Image 1 (cartoon, rainbow, N blue to C red):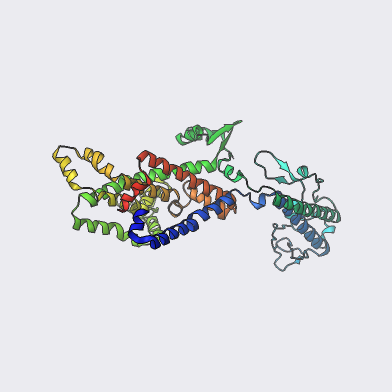
Image 2: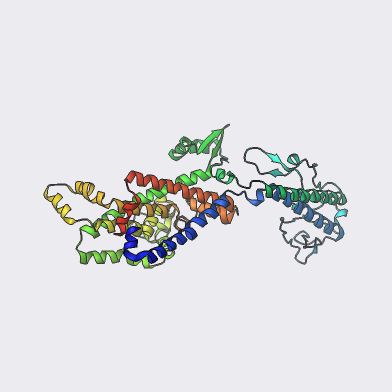
Length: 478
């Protein structure tokens, strides 16, 4: 700070500090606080009041549909004479005999007969009436609890074997009880402590894996399954197999990211050394251009370009077929998109500059006379690298490795596009599915925030192993 004050003066330094503070607050702190709040909040649809409200709406819609079918004739259409429930609860048959789904679900009656439902021996199946039951399971992490037992409600359900008038009466009673309970529970939930760790617990929740005895025997023999068992991510209870799917996906993603980072380091270190220390300056410029020019193309386009290389009839298989190693006409194409190594290679290609540039920048500050002196003293190439180049390049290696690891761990487009669902998903895909596929953004926020913390811990551990400090990273920019 003193150097900034001496160089730019108080006014410019204060402006710079304010800009950094606003940037950190707006782009780092506030988004993480918002994500943490969502992660600590139970999903609204899992609240007791939400369950009671859903029950009331289902019962209301059941009443509307039953009244419509009781009062209106049912046509023998080819689709079974499906009813159209309206917003006001009055429905009538349509020309196409198709059902319009409601917010609470879809009513799907079976083929009816001429006349009202009261003339039929059994009413058509209606989903909302089937769900109009006070014996509703409430979400709890440890025990199985039901709405009627917890809040002393009478056991009521719409029985399709009863008369329509009786079913309507029961559904109305359920609706009144449910909405009254919803109002009461909302008041209680508004005054109660609303934060919970249950969303984080979902990451380590065990799921039952149905498996035949022969498949179980084969699965138990796999090395990766034995590792999961050792780590407590997979266990057997009463002869049944349980796996912590979320934690397994997280563990696998972190291992993949570390493997990708190591592969990128093995590829980029020789390139950086060649450009920085083993090439004349005029030739190094052309080598740098060869590295940079491909990255003028949008990342997504470069990833899609790889699909034409690894496809069943892509460039690699075509070359192998031309060389006589495989016969594509006989279906002998190699399934590159099923190999995790393919994803590693594409990620390394995608993020190679984030590894090579920090190493190159630090290596270029090394005095070449040190290398010449070591050679004159008889040092081997390995010893020169181990004792001179690598220690000097350590900040660049640390920065490049951290950047590549974080990008690889959070990669979404590469594994999704390259594997096309034929490989185990990465954790970023699990987070996406929680937010947008299963509409469970609270659990997705817990996954995201927990993933961020774990990655920070790994980065801190890596810095401790590398004996690097934050101020050492300044060497990368100097």
